[in-house]
Image 1 (cartoon, rainbow, N blue to C red):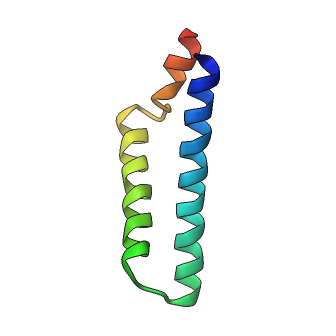
Image 2: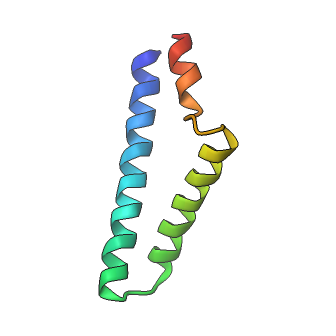
Length: 66
């Protein structure tokens, strides 16, 4: 179970890293389209989840349990 939790966490991390990288790249090039909005929405959602859990990833307590 712990391996599954870590795999999910890694997948989420890679998606978020890609979204942040995309925002950086599009910001530097001046590109504005739906992909920029989607990346921004992902980053905003992740920020809300992180703040709602008082700065802790919601998967941390689950991983500690296992």
